Image (cartoon, rainbow, N blue to C red; front, side, top):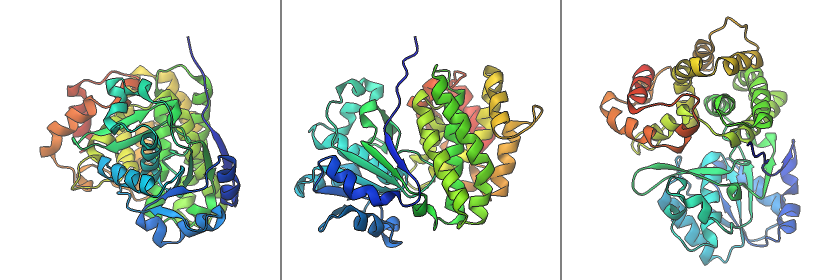
Amino acid sequence: MAVLSFLTTTHFDFGAIQRTGKELSRLGVGNPLFITDKGVRTVGLLDQVLAASGIEQPMIYDNTPPNPTEEAVNEALAHFRESGCDGVVCVGGGSPIDLGKAVALLADSGAELQTYDPMQGGAKRISAVAPLIAIPTTAGTGSEVSSGFVIVMNDGRKATFASPKLTPSLAICDPELTMGLPPQLTAATGMDAIAHCIEAVLSPVVNPPAEGVGLDGLWRAWRHIERAVQDGSDREARWQMMMASTEGAMAFSKGLGAVHAMSHAAGRIPDLKLHHGTLNAVLLPAVIRFNAEAAPEKIARLKQAAGLGPDADLASEIAQLNARIKLPATLGEMGVKPAMMDELVHYASNDLSGRTNPRAASPDDYRQLFSEAM
């Protein structure tokens, strides 16, 4: 039996951040902790949100690392409690939003983060989560509407936490906040959205509405990502890419797959600090080839959504798209070395995302996939 449920309220359009203060009042939040990173704060995007919030003396945590860590979660949580905060506003890409979700989860619980690890049955232990508004400044992660977050744990794992209770209370998606995004980051985050749409559609979980959203998101992203990369001031392209990003996360309510299992395994390597969206882009071709025989009808629909002919090779088309938007072609170009293979295979094989890959992947399969992408 399929059980269908759909996510949260999203205010979406240019100027949407002007609703921030009104929505904080509606949620009964008078002293939120604004969670962001130093880059978002430096370029002035946080200031725009603060101005719209109406909060006169805002509490701010801006030390979010590129791949958020359990240590950073605990640091932000301490700031939340010491400042007497009653809610969270996340401003940034997937890292600040994921960090903010973890803080909102722990704010009222008193337990350690690992208590809620779904790989250990922790999702059923989640009760109350503090009110949370997510305001993305990139178009890729979709974390503002998703029911999960990813944190690098103290034991070295990049763990995925998932529960409908972790979906933000409200998302505010204002494409204006992405207008200054540099071309390389536009490309990487855009391919993150494309990976979400593709893996969600390929997931064997039965949820046709979410699958339809994923196909629509791919339709938008495939037609606009190059425009957004080439001209960051293209408002239509920015709007469409943010919508594709949001739709990608709505779609992956039915799960992800081996691309994300592998991306999480590589993204946890502390010395490399690899970008999640770039990893997804590089890994997609190999995983699509691996999955092709397991889901031929879905591959055909993905090609149709991307505007490709029935004889096109989706994996090759993605590799060519990566090249056109100047993303790396291999993991080796990103600094991943064959000597890291054993730990990559170990973490990918035990990642939650791999459970919804359309074709079961063994450790040997992951080793082969990493080798192909290397």
